[in-house]
Length: 517
Image (tube, rainbow, N blue to C red; front, side, top):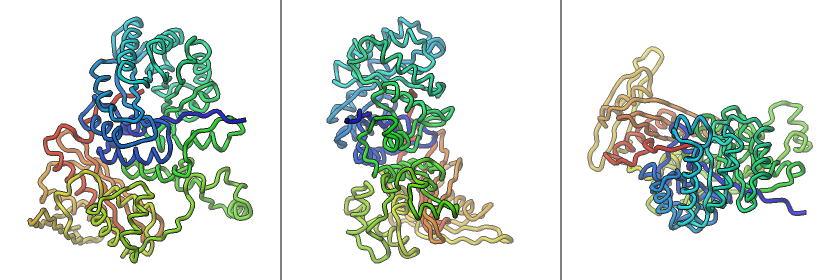
């Protein structure tokens, strides 16, 4: 008997990008969207076009270039929002406008100061306008889990009558418990008389750690679509994790009797790409995609796994894309081998871009015997994007010790101009940053510094992610190298270059005004 297909709606680029400090450039959004298409999700929520020019441009670029999944744009039940969403989506193969309005009493009274009847009228008008422009329209009553059931049923029925083809029930603040949320979904499915004319969807937040459990409970009670993010990224504690929901359905098909169309062998690659571009590391014990998910340290466990992996592994590493590579990249690898491997990882480079990346690849390959996928992803996130490399690192020298004042000398090049500065600091990185500040001459404050080893071993590539504050806006910078001081300098310089490249442009990372479901 064929299993019922659950649609997977990915909102990494919309809700996921609302994670603090996770703003992506337009080209980075396209890179992730193309990988999501390879993952074979059913829908990609690409952004909230009316919120900023950067959001609009990102949605328009993805709509024009990504084929396969439906491309979705978010809009409030406001004419201007809906018109902006459609203007950005028009080039999509399968466009969908997603309109929403808050329906819980606390939101209606405190945020809107409107009555139920006024909110109902907004919902109907919003859905009708969206449907006049687009064949696929999704409607979300925000904060559904805290909405009165009678009003929720009324507004869902009215939205379907107005033309909604999907109804999404969000647990916006992660308030619901699995049994409660499952019962709510069952009530909507059974008591909305026209529910059979629309897909029933759910969008769960993880404030109490229940997002995946609530999503799976909803599936058990009739939900046909799940709204999820890669690595569970999102506002506050995040969203239901795509990889956890998908692999639960696949691994426990005996229990759920449902399946998704996701190509699970692309899960790990997608997870690493999102983590790298957003600058949000995946915790080691994260289910499915964490570094320890398929690791066994206990001697008893190791012995059993060697004899039969099924003793301690309920899914295989290969199912999520952890099969070993046939291609080993090193110092003797050529441009062609690097280009092919990067293409497999989701990067299509122009010749000029490949030249830059190849030179940085050789620098890393000279310092370690093998260059792994994780190294390449770190390198790509640090070196690519639409940020103009206004200042380039030419040279640095560090003097440091436990009884020596840390001193850094840095030389930067801009075109034919070369500037050198030296500075002291609390440590070698602080000294280097002080020298960079003197050259670039920007008033910035370092808010966050994160260093991680991309792979194991003493030759591991170190990836540094920094967040700096400049004139009220937070900027992300990334750098990668086998030398952690160099990686630190490159990350800080990357952030400074982003600020300089943006100039006075209003469409800057960190300026987007998103909204939550």
